Image (cartoon, rainbow, N blue to C red):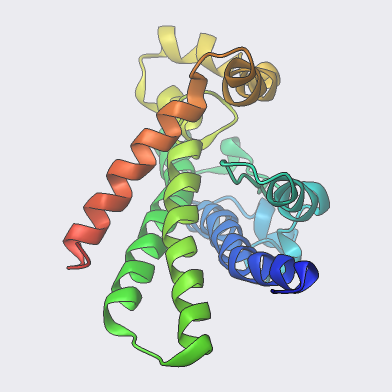
Length: 223
C-alpha cells in the first residue's frame, strides 16, 4: 500500500506544475498585450514576464488549490495576482481593453491545445511517462477550466471586461459599475449556490469545460 504522504505529494506534483504554468501564462499574456497596446504599467512593475514568482498569489495560487485538493474537491480553482492595467494609457481604450482581457483565456486555450498535441505525440515508458501524461492531461483540463471561468461576463473577470467593451455604452457602463462587487457575486455563483443545492456557475463551467476538452481531443486525434 502506498504511503499516504507519498500519494499526496504525487497528486500535488501532477496538479501544481500545470496550474502554476496556466496561471503564469494567463497573467503574462495580459501584461504583454497591455504593453503592446501602449500601457507600460505592468512593464514597470516587472509583470511582463513568464517568471511565475512575479505572478503567484500566496493564497490564490498555493493555499487555495492545496486546500481544495486536501478536501478532494471536484472543482480545482486558483488565481494569481491580477496584472495592473491603466486602460486610459491604451492607445484605443475601448478596443484594446477587449484585446488585453481576451489574451488570458486565449493563451490558456492555446496551452490546452499544446497539451493535447503532446499527449498524442509523446510516448515515454514507465513511471516517468505515466507522470508526464498525468501532467499533460491535467494541463489540458486546468487551462480549459481557467479559460471558461474567466469568460464569465462579470467584471473584474476577463469576460466582464470583454462584455463591457463590446456592449453599447448604455449597457456597458452599468456592467462596469458591478466590478467592486464582482468577486462577491462570483463567490455566490460558484460556491454558495451549489451548497444550497443549485447548479450555479459551477455546473455551467463543468459542462462547458467538458465540451471544449472533448472538442480539443477530437481536433488533435486523441478521440
